[in-house]
Each structure stands twice: as C-alpha cells, then as structure tokens.
Amino acid sequence: MTEAGTAASSAATSLPEPVRQRVLALAAQALGQLPASDIPAPLRRFASFAPAKRAKLSASVLGPILETDEHFRRLTAFQVRREHPELGDAVAEGVPVPAADPVEVAALAYLLRPEDWEQHIAAAAAQVPVEAPRAAEEAVNRLSDQLDQARTETRQVRERLREQVNELKAENVTLRRKLNEARQRISGLQSELEQRTTEAETADERVEAARAEVERELRKLRSRITELEAVEHAARRAAGQERELASTRTRLLLDTLVEAASGLRRELALPPGGELRPADTVAGTEPEAAPVGRTAPDDDPALFDELLSLPQVHLIIDGYNVTKTVWPNSPLHSQRQRLVTALGALVAQRRVEVTVVFDGAELSGPVQLNPPRGVRVRFSPAGVIADEVIRQLVRAEPPGRPVVVVSTDREVAESIITLGARSLSATTLISRIARS
Image (cartoon, rainbow, N blue to C red; front, side):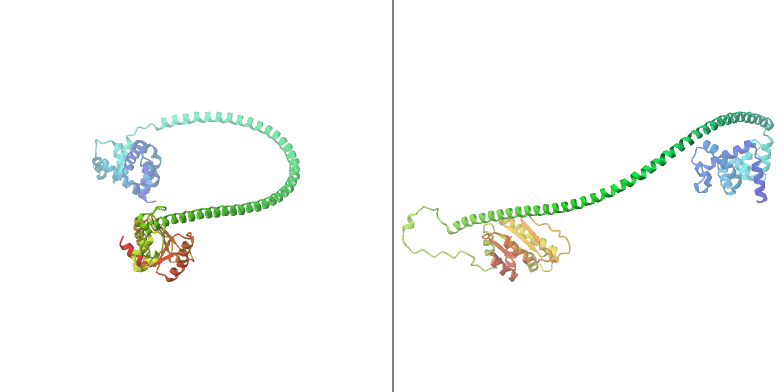
C-alpha cells in the first residue's frame, strides 16, 4: 500500500461520527445520479432506492468502498461538487469559508481531497463533544445486563434439555424393545412372504400362459371377423353399385327410346294413329323418303349439331387430342382450362352430357382445374392411357344410347365404332365451339 493510501485509510477510519454520517449521506445522494456502469456491483441494487432509504441501507457497503475504490470516490466527489458548487469549489481550491459548518466542510474535504483535507477533518473532530467514556460505560452496563440475562436463559435451557434427554433415553429403551419385537415379526413375515411369492410366481406363470393362449385365439378370431366384414362390405358395395348402375342404364335407355320415338315421329311427320284423311284416298305416286342417317361428311358442323340434338346423347372428348390440335404451343394447364371453359358454354346451349378425358401419364402431381357445371373431367389412372378410359366410358353406356366420341386418333375411332358409338374429328368440335 502507498503512503497516500495508508494516510487515506487512517484518516477514513478515524473520521468523527458526524463527519462519517455526512460523508455517507452525500455519497448516497450522488449514487442515485451516477450511470449504472460507474457504480460498483455491490452498490447497484441500492441505486434505485429513495435517498433516505439508500443512505440507511447502503452505509455498511458504501463506507468501505469509498475508502478502497479511488475511482468511485472521485466520481462521487465530482457529483457532490455539482450538487454543492459554491462550498465545493471553495473547499477544493483551499479558500476558507468561516461561516460554513465544519462537519459539512470536513465531509466535502474527505471526498474532494484537497491538500489540507486532513486539517478540515481534524478541525471538525475538535468540535465534537467528548462523551465517549460515559457512552462506553453505559454500553458496558447494558451489555453486562444482557450477558446475565443470557446466562440465566442458558441455564434454564440447559435444564430443559437435560430433562428432554432423560425422556428421550427412556423412550429410546422402549423403542429398542419394540424394534426387536418388530424385527422378529418381520423375520417371520418375510419367510411367509417368500413362500407366498414363490406360489404367486408359479400361479402367474400359469395365468400368463393361459392369457397368451387366449390372446392368440382372440387375435385369430378378430382377424377372421375383419376379413369377413371386409368381404361383406365389398359384397354389399358391389351389389349396391350394380343395382344403381343397372337402374341408371335402364333409365337412360328408356329416356333415349322415348325421346327417340318422339323425335322420329316429329321427323317423319306421322299423323295420329287411327285418323284417315280424305286426301289419303286419292291414288298417286308417292316420293321415296330421304334416307335417315348421317349423309354429311364427318367434319361438317351441321352433322355435329344434328348429333347433339339426339335424345340423351353423351359427348366424350379426347382432351389432349383436341387441345394439342388447336393450341399446341400453350402450356398443358392452359390448354385444359380453355377447353373445359368452351365446353361449358356448349353445355349451357344444348344441355348435353359431356365427359372430357385427359391422359394422366403427363401429370407430375395433383391437378388444379375448375370445370364448369355440366362438364365431367377425368384423368387416366397410372399405367392406363386416355384411349382405354374412353373405351371404358363407351362400354359403360347401355346399348341404344347415342354416344359421340371426338378424337382424331384413328385407332380410337375404329375401336369405339365397333362398340356402337359415333366418331367425329377434333376440327368439327373446334368449329362448333368457335360459333358459340
């Protein structure tokens, strides 16, 4: 330790009590004004307290830090000098202030440390009244009384503890006797427990074996029940689908026959049955009826309209065959949406059933498509081409229902003709859509 440090420590420890209290009050006041980074760690928790509470609670920590931490003392002295500029400047510059309180001057001198700071502390100490002997005597008397009282209480406590020890010894003897009896009973119970445990383990093994056998049989029965339920469900579903499909096919066929008969009657202009007109009795040569059928070329738009006017007609379209014919450079998703949108307008005009089949082999994931009302869209499953799905759709229709397939694929056209459907080219559909 340096001489300056030794002198500061000596002076700090011999500060008169009023000076020490004033130093702590000034330092506690300055503590609340300092940044947190300049406050030593032990004092940071006191910085947010009220000034009076801060000075009271931090005194035991603040005094030693002021003695040992020179940097913190200087920061505190700077803040105190800002709070007391006139007296602080006078003390720091060594200017006498006769009217000032010697205790206040000594406290500021201790913090600011001018050259004559020890003289200010000595002057303040000289004015402190000497009452130490009397206070010390009173303190000794007070401590003597407290010591006597403590001795009396100690004797009383010692007697109570001695009585408690005797009681505990007697209780200990009783507990030891009971413990020996309990040990003997426990020994007998342990032997019995071991015997019962052996019997229980044997019984558990038999029970586990029986349980395992029951669980095996139960699993077999559950598996069989699941198989039978699946077979029953599949049979019921197949029967229901067959009944529904047969009913749908019959209803479509009847509607087709009824509408075809009505259309044929209108087309041939047949008179009501049982009514003979006078003109029918006049002899003459009657012209031959024009052939009923499709005399126009397959790509004639008029033929397409004529086929659409057939009762209960089902229009099946080879999707990519049509879109790649008219929009070959567009993305596939754009081709699909443009086609189904155009077919929606056609359905709204003619009220026909329309099914569009796209090849699913070119898809890399789920398709986002919004078909209009009345337009059915199907993608061929994995491993199946769209041509086969079209043939399945034609075969699914009842015999006699008019089915029109739009595709320029010759193989598709030939196969669906053998199934009883009519084939039209993609250009015919595009021409009809263009007129919509």
